[in-house]
Image (cartoon, rainbow, N blue to C red; front, top):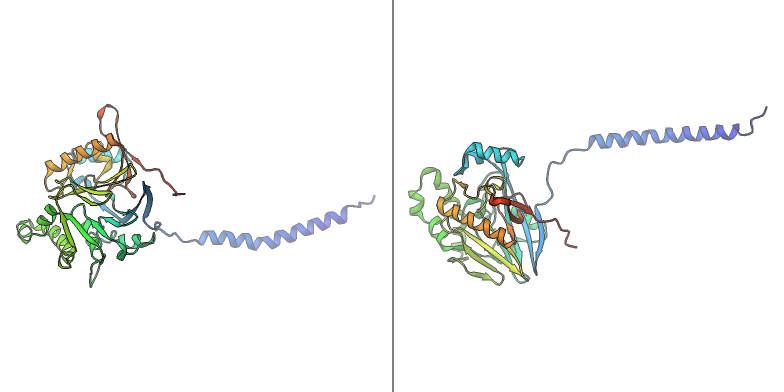
Length: 334
C-alpha cells in the first residue's frame, strides 16, 4: 500500500533537523554570553528630584560611610542599639548616608551642605560627580547654606587632593555666626583635646578660603536667606547648628542636618544623642522638639544621615511611643 504523504513527512523532518542544527550554535552562544556577564557593583548616579510647589528639590548623595554607632550613640546602651538595629534588619557597622540638597527656586540655586570631599574617608566625596549627573555645574551654585561645620557637611566646599581649590567659585557661603565663631577659633582648637583638634582643622581648611575670598556671610538665628528659604536655630549638636525651612505654594520641606543620625534608634527614642554633640542636653531637646513638630505638621523632612535620598515624613506611633519614618513615594515627575 502506497504512502502518498511520506515524501512530505520526510521533507518536514529534514527541515526541522536543519533548523535545530542551525540554532544550536546560537543557543550555545547566548548561554555563554549571559554566563560571562561581569558584575558591575556600582549604583546609579546619586541624585533624586522632587517638586515642592514651584521649587525643584534635588537630593544629592555624597556616598555612605560605615560607622560603629554602638560606640558613638549616647544616652542609650550598646544592647539597646543592637536590638533596635536587629528589629530594622540593619547590618553592623551601619552604612550611614551623607546627603545634601539642592534647591532650585527658579531664580537661585541653593545648596544645603556639601558632603565631605576627602575629609571622611574614601567612600565619601561624591557630591560634585552627583551634582553634575543631573545637569548642574559647581559654577552655577548661587548660595550654600551649611547646617553645621562638621567635616561631612563642609568638606565639599573645597575640591579634593593636591591643589585643593574653592569648589563653588561663584557661591556666597552662609553659616550661623555661632558656628563660625566656635570652629574658626584658633584658641578653641588649641584648647580642644587631641582627638578633637581634627574637627577644627577640617572646618578651617574648608571655610577659611571662602573667608579670604570675601564669600562668607554669616547670620544669626532665624533669617530669611532668599525668598522661600529661611534658617532656624537648633543649637546643640554644634554651637550654631541650624535647620533650613523651604516653602513654596503651601508646601514645606525642613532640612534637618544632624538632628538625626540613626533612624532605627532615634525615632524610637528621640532622647538618644551622639558623642559628636557639643551640648548633649541642648541637642537632645532640639531633636525631641523637631520630631514632634514634623509629626504634627506633616511636612516633608530632608535628613543628612537617613538612607538616600533621605526625604520623607514623620508619623507619631500609637500610644506616644516614638515615631515612624515614611519615605516619599517615588515620582517620575511626569
